[in-house]
Image (cartoon, rainbow, N blue to C red; front, side, top):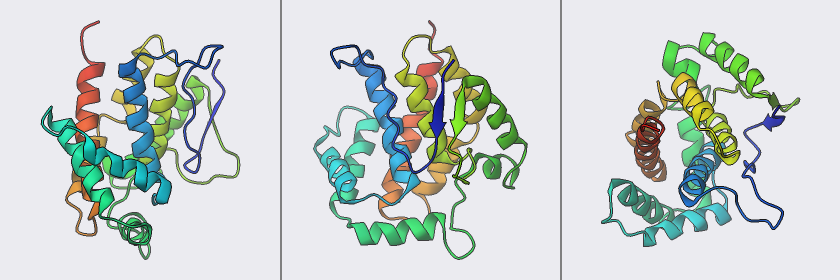
Length: 215
């Protein structure tokens, strides 16, 4: 039985390794886990200088290969022209604000128009069945977009059967996350985060198709 903790302030670190320290995931699975981990990091807190520099490196991605690559390149270019203080202010306007930000990044809000509703209760039940534990002193609801991305990182990181990933995605992510990322890509307060929204929407759509491919 899995025993994992989830908290928005923690960077996911749940990729399986062998005794020599080599990843047990193939390249495709490593990419999926890394994409979810990046989205979690960017949506949990404003990026620090190290993360911003990492994302700026995406500007070197070949943007002609497909639409996802184009969205990655645009994200890198947006990071290259941003600084930490700007992104701190942008993050506050988008997700915190005075009372609330321009966007409310919770599943319950997107599915019902209210916080702490039945979708959160169902999520908590499923997380308990999966063996995930909540950090004791952390009060952020588990249906925050960053927390859900963290769960996907850990499910992918275990390798093996993808049925748990598909079930979790369809129950708690697929019904609203693309809409959230589309809203983010069009938000009035967003500059850098518009590129995050475009990348998130493209990746989420791709992962939906991946998880529904015939076995």
